[in-house]
Each structure stands twice: as C-alpha cells, then as structure tokens.
Amino acid sequence: MTEEVLQGSLRLLGTVLAVQANFYRVQLDVTDTEMRRHRDRGAINLSTSLRLPVTESPTPPLLLCTRRTRLKKIGQQVIVGDRVLVEEPDWAGKRGAIADVLPRQNQLDRPAIANVNQILLVFAVADPPLEPYQLSRFLVKAESTGLDVVLCLNKSDLITTQQQNQINEYLISWGYQPSFISVYKSINIDKLSIRLKDKITVVAGPSGVGKSSLINALIPSINLRVGEISGKLARGRHTTRHVELFDLPSGGLLADTPGFNQPDLDCSPEELAVYFPEARQRLAVARCRFSDCLHRDEPDCAVRGDWERYQHYLEFLEEAIARQSQLNQQADPESTIKVKTKGKGKQKYEPKLESKKYRQKSRRTQLQELQELYRESEE
Ligand SMILES: Nc1nc2c(ncn2[C@@H]2O[C@H](COP(=O)(O)OP(=O)(O)OP(=O)(O)O)[C@@H](O)[C@H]2O)c(=O)[nH]1
Ligand SMILES: [Mg+2]
Ligand SMILES: [Zn+2]
Image (cartoon, rainbow, N blue to C red; front, side, top):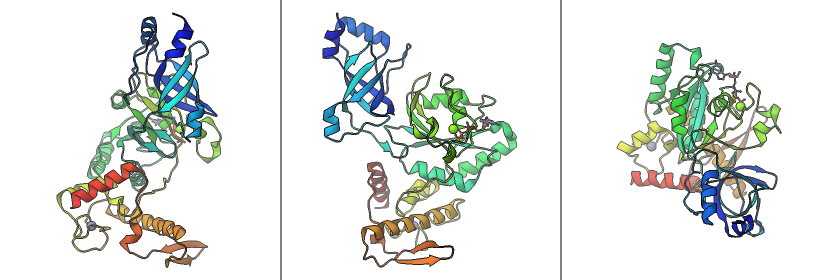
C-alpha cells in the first residue's frame, strides 16, 4: 500500500502537547507498531473517546500540525491538552492538519491547558519554609478549579521524622493527606508516579520548592532548568512563556508551570467556603440558616467555628468581596459602592453587603456544578 492512499483516508486522534506560533505539536494515540499493523490493513481504527494516548513502547508518533482554515473561520482555538482530529498525515515529513477539536472536559486559564485531570501542588517542608497562609492560598486556588488536588511536600530530607509527623497531622486537620517526597534522596517518587499514571497533571507551587527538579526526576530525558528563578527575571524564556505537556515514561502527561508566590483567588464570595475541605465537611452534616450565608456573623451558621483555617477563610472572603464589588462597579458605573482612599494611595472598596451583588455566576461550568452541588446540599 502506498503512502498516498493512506494519506487520503486517514483521520487520527491525538493530544496537543505544545503550541509553537501557528503550529501544534500533536501526539497521536496510536503507537508506531499499531500504526504499521493498521497501515497494512489499510485503515486506522478511529476511537472518538477522550481517553489518553495508548502508551506502549515505542512512543506514539508526534506530528507538527497546522489548524484547518475552517477552524480559524469559526474561531475554534486549539490549546495544549486538546484532543484533536488530525487529517492528511505526512509520515515522512511528520506533518498533519488539525481538522477538529473534541469538546473539552475542562480548561485552565493561566496557563491555558485543556482536559486536565489533576493538579499536583508542590511545596517544600523547608528552604523555602512552609508557610501555612501561602499553602492555604494555593490550596484554595487549586480547589477552585474543581480538579483533584495532589499535595506533595518536597525536601523531606531537610527535616526529622518527628517534624514530618507534626506537619502531617496539621495538614490532616485541614483535610489533606500530603505525600512527603525528596527529589534528592528519591523518597516516594515512585509512589507519586503511580498517581500520575495515564492522567494529565499540572504541577503548581511557589518558586524554589523543586517543581522542575521533580519533573526531571520523573522524566529524566527532559532536563528542565533547575535552581533558576523562573518568575519575572526569566520572562521570555522557555520556562515561563511556554506551556508544554511532557510524556511520563509510565504513561500520562505532565505540565510544569513557573513558580509564583501569591496566586490570585478569583472565586466569588459565595463559593469560597466549598474550597475548604473543613467547611465542606461541616456543610455535609449541618446547614446554615440562610442559603446565601457568607459564614461570618450570620446567625445559625454551620461553617463558622474554631477550625484552624477559619481565619484564612475570613481573609480570603474579604478579598473575594472586594474583588466582586470592583467587578460590579465596572459593570455598573452608577453603583453606590463608595471608593475610599486609604493612606499610601491604596484604594479600599467598601462593598454594600447585599447578597444580590454576589449573584454573578462564574463562567466556568465546573464551578457552576460545584455551586449547584453546594446549594443542593443546603436545600
Ligand atoms: N534539599 C533538597 N533540595 C532540593 C530538592 N529538590 C530540589 N531541591 C533544590 O531546590 C532548588 C529549587 O529547585 P527547582 O526545581 O528549580 O524549583 P522550582 O519549584 O522549579 O522553582 P521555580 O522554577 O522558580 O518555580 C534547587 O536548588 C534544587 O536543587 C530536595 O529534594 N531536597
Ligand atoms: Mg522551575
Ligand atoms: Zn454559614
């Protein structure tokens, strides 16, 4: 059978690993071996499921693809993580054309990645020191995506078993079960790779905790930059500008993200509580008197209490309210929200605490689902 015959009839499914200018690096689901087998039969079995690429050795073929004009016309973007239909594969030139994008299961915005299964949140137990407030912020941010959160604490080589047990107990009270790892001493790296198998995982966490080191340990062939500041200083370099999915040797894909120390929380005041496992647990067994309770000083509140992170909740809530007021003000210039100027030129928004103000629904379907779940549990 000739290549032309093949090229005319083939439509293949793959995953976008990277976007480079107007080209998309697509990893096909089929392996070279499968391909040859199917080629001999004259067809490739096209599966339209959203399953991850089949990972047999040798590795699946990579094609550099363009986006069909039709997709450009309808404004269909293609982002990393997208499941795409590839037409006209040119095996020799390793080229192809993306003809369609399958519906996304979800989408993260910064960085833009589709169909993510979980977030691997990496912190260090020391160097930089583990700061509860910062960790809490990252956890809430990660929870607000609606994805599973895997919490890893790196550099466990720097503390004693006793210290480790203390941290562990502390975080269990927050509703998390951290994995203590050490890239240096190869502690629990194998266990972690089992949790990453056949999934799309995004690695997040502050600068300097060992995210790139960890990815290098999991995928020895990629050799990411380690020990460099990948934040502002390195803007424009590979590490910050590009989002890329890397192939895990035992199956699955992993994306590194540049470390940043204070993620913005962008959820609404009403949904904030469900991003705390402790609050979720409380709401599962009792309910607040008011369905729009913000769990501050409302009577008969099921969430307010003496749990460790309640203070964090209150702080994040203030932020969420301030942001919401700002958004409402932008949308409604006639708004009665006063803008007070506080020393050093900082603007402080004084929100009117009407629940209507917070009704603005999140655009992300996942969040809506979460909110609905939350409301259902209240009703
Ligand atoms: N003690 C110890 N140090 C580690 C370990 N893993 C990484 N490091 C060191 O921690 C420093 C930061 O590592 P990176 O992998 O660059 O950290 P990162 O999270 O990617 O940082 P950014 O790219 O800035 O976000 C480097 O000096 C590493 O050698 C570990 O398990 N134990
Ligand atoms: Mg890094
Ligand atoms: Zn309440």
